[in-house]
Length: 267
Image 1 (cartoon, rainbow, N blue to C red):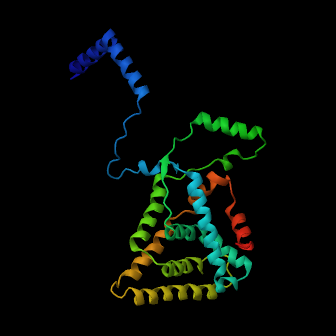
Image 2 (image 1 turned 90 degrees about the vertical axis):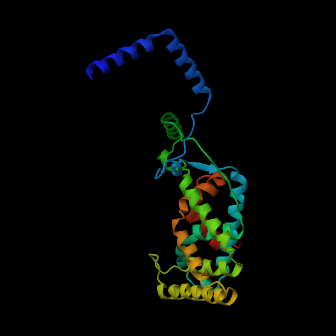
């Protein structure tokens, strides 16, 4: 075995030292530099594709549509009489917790479509130069303002949710009852009117159930399907929504401050 291995090594050395071999390798390097490397499909169980960072193909268009949906959503929330009866701090706790799920429900209701493209991760040198430039401009924590683009997997979760809603052809009333169930969450820390909010959530669920039984008598599983929609909302990350739709058009934004301003404004 040692002799065979040794002969192979000698052959390889002679081949690599030949002029023809060096010329061929030089040509291969040129072609590789001119063409992007082939992307093999991920194998079973591979999650590398879902970790790739993506951005909106048309950030201004999609961001404007999402902003309009957010305004419309908060206008709906503020129009609910039971919500208006809550103290402002209780309102803010509820809205801070559920603005992203409510927004995604609104995107589904308004049939908002958006496309994304893969983006290249910044190199270590780019990060160092960016951080140094921000330090020179007087920023104390340069990394805190650097964007964290969503992953392909996170975007797929949003698109999967939208597709699920569209496949069910959810009506306006059903969307309203779903939003009520999401909005009135009694399990949030910091709430004082827990029993009142719990009762409102129960009423929204009962109203949804009664509406489904009345309108969709032939589809006994529809109420369960709509509850699956609610469960899918748990996978929606608020930071992902903010980075995807709002950072490209308004930059770094404190969603808590913006929500408080919108709650107090006349929409």
